[in-house]
Amino acid sequence: MRRYNTPTLKRDVANYLSGYVDGEGCFSVSFSKREKLKIGLEVKPSFAVGQNYDRREVLDLMMDYFGCGFMRRDYADKTLKYEIRSLDELLEKVIPHFYSFPLKSSKQKDFLLFAEICKKMKNLKHLQIDSLKNIIDLAYQMNGSGKRKHSRETLKRFLR
Amino acid sequence: MRRYNTPTLKRDVANYLSGYVDGEGCFSVSFSKREKLKIGLEVKPSFAVGQNYDRREVLDLMMDYFGCGFMRRDYADKTLKYEIRSLDELLEKVIPHFYSFPLKSSKQKDFLLFAEICKKMKNLKHLQIDSLKNIIDLAYQMNGSGKRKHSRETLKRFLR
Image (tube, rainbow over all chains, first blue to last red):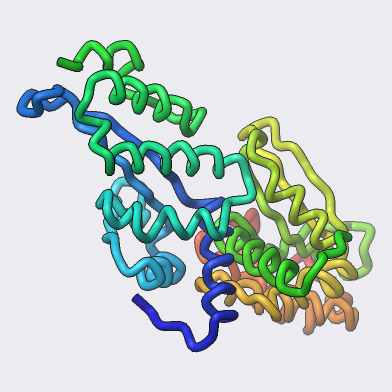
């Protein structure tokens, strides 16, 4: 994780990155059917930011700033994605950042739902049927226009 | 133009907007054949930032911050564009901002070429054949992947 020379410099970068994420970032929570899990469904939160491969400087800066996550090249659409999936890193690094330097568009609402879900997962709420149903409901309020493989009702039918 | 309560607040917004523009903004210089112009070619610089129509908050903030420009709805791709085309406003408001709060990706190179062209236009260089050829050369170094209606050579043939 980078050390900044002055608090002002760090604050400048923090605001810059929030602005960038407001345009190019995505908070999402996806679900996968998992026979091996007792409850039948895996919950996967992710913070991801995309960019064309030839303009990766801001993604490098962001990875340096957060000090975690990984880069993934998407050959299909010629983009690079910076992504953080670890629940602990999301809770310790990403979420505190966006509380301190909030998004100024309605994407902030997605972030707040995302943060709520991650905190519930920390308390293992995704391993109990009723609270996992609640997590599904919260997740399906996010990213209004996003496409989902399964309807909310189908997902809930996977639960055991 | 909005008045900010503290210099820190203004600086925060300035950094945020630069970050946003690094992802979603575009500096461009286009050329149109104009029979009525003595030199035969019009030069049109533009700074534009796009966003989905349902998430326009940052564009509103930006219009407020710069205190100029206009919004344009693009029905084709359901986006809203915030755009500044006036040379004086570009020179007095947009360009000084991006000198003070530079982009951190290679898009900054496009901005520097853009600023150079705008300054040349202020000195009426776009009305003289040789210096207009030079402006065309600079503009064609911008936005690497962008599509142009005319090749550089075709444009130069329009000059009189």
